[in-house]
Image (tube, rainbow, N blue to C red; front, side, top):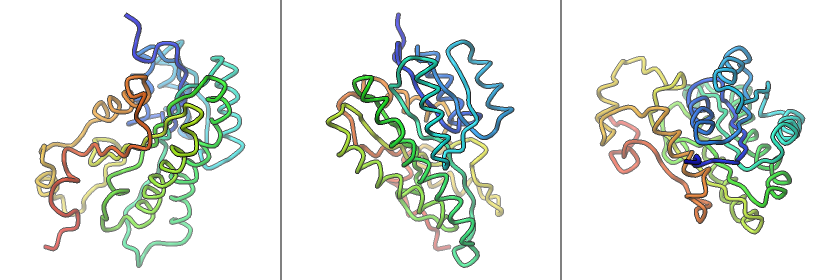
Amino acid sequence: MPGRLAGKVAIVTGAARGQGEREARLFAAEGARVMLTDVLDVELKSAAEDIGDAARFMHHDVSDEDDWTAVVATTVDAFGRLDVLVNNAAIHHVVPIEHETVADFQRIVSVNLLGTFLGIRSVIGAMRGSGGGSIVNVSSLAGVRGYPGHSSYAASKWGVRGVTQVAAVELGGDGIRINSVHPGMIDTAMLPVDPRGNLEARLAQVPLHRIGTTDDVASLVLFLASDESSYLSGAEITIDGGSAAGRPAVSRE
């Protein structure tokens, strides 16, 4: 049976490890040809080579406009078209506002928000040439609710929501769908380490009482990339074990 992404070509950023790598692997398993991009060259090369002939890889700073031009051009040259973009690449740190620096704030926003904007803008022409496409922007539960220590990260991820909404309105006529996903606690290297070690207390705020997996997120991203979600655009989907429906994120204890 053909896969759910048979015949499609995708770019997945931040694909050297974690959610991005899992998404790239799942896409390839479902019939897509995939360009994996990241700045972690060793891990990126290993992931792409392990996927096999359906994958290519490129060093890619998502905050760099010229890098985006090169990635899109190389993808189309290699595979003949472009149908899917997953803006997954992101960086993260936790620090109170009073200790946040301008340099760190700008660095987080540059990768997480500017990188998403540049990705959307860069693929429009190629997706028009393919008759449309799907863009999945990975935001965060921190782009939906306030969390202490997340001023720069939250600013970037709330911004991803905004640019997603505008792009969905502007590009719908071209058959280009844009949706955002908002993961909660997911078991990756970006999962913040709580210095108080109160994982049990944090899980108590998750109605499903577990940390999410990269498979959980990748399955949702696959659905949004596929034609199964062909009438879905401008959606904001939390994938958080029910956290957004639960108790307040900021503890008053």
